Length: 278
Image 1 (tube, one colour):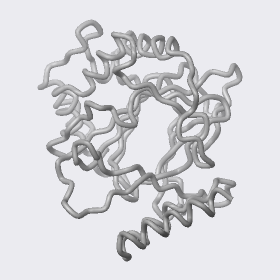
Image 2 (image 1 turned 90 degrees about the horizontal axis):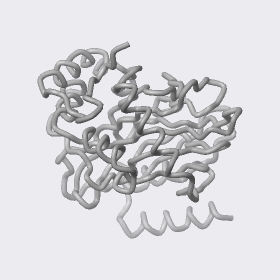
Image 3 (image 1 turned 90 degrees about the vertical axis):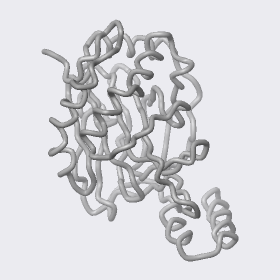
């Protein structure tokens, strides 16, 4: 089967015209989705490309988990600049002009800017019992002063089944409905627009029978639309109804931040942080 996005496996190149056409082919579906725009494409990249990236990701081994909390467990990441040569080149290709043009045509968002720092992106690895609760992402790139607009995830897990956990879930902002769910199978791409209320995550713990980690490529894209005086949002977690998901104060803080002076917001945040640690 031919890949959807046919990068040349050796040069990792594609003609801009073809990339734009592929974006147009997904535009109606992507831009019609609710509660926010998203899509999923299977067999996304050439098999040789995705297989080599998986092999190099596994070669990196494991390392201590990052951001360990009640809302995030046993997840870590590898910056592409520290990856082997081929994987690094793949990330550069996914930040290149043709891929940006593909994303712009699909999403309708013009002026997308890739992140050369890969802040929060790279290869994501979640080990057995690991999870990431439902959340909305941080929305501001501090170094470049840009607004976050798109996430691209490409999964690296052969023969993964739903019962192995780790499915990517999309929820409404009020957490009344799980709108969609995607098993993180090998070479499945999920892309979605990001904003203050774009709730998503992989809250079901990874449980592969052979102890295999859940692996993915993660890339974020921005626009130069950040307005002076706007307050940045950190990651906001929310509980699924009827679940044992940990409570997070971030949703409360998001409301407080809109209506109180900065000094009151900081004191409230510090107080809630101390309460949470008890």
